[in-house]
Image (cartoon, rainbow, N blue to C red):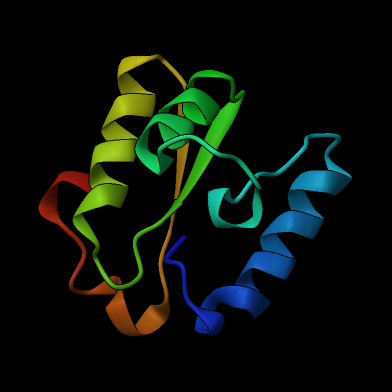
Length: 93
């Protein structure tokens, strides 16, 4: 999910839904750590049962993270705002 105040309401909904299923949702910008962020993202993906990727805004990193999760055979759930939905990358259509 893009690191932006605009995504806070969506994060609350995603967090609640995932928590209610008995999982521990993690959004890396909400976690405190001293390491480099890319390594933390990849580590969290490796440790995940599944990954929810929000492609709103079409930031290149989210596509990399989704592919990394797929390579690890993790389920990937794509989310996108209705405004950006028609502009989604062809690989996730």
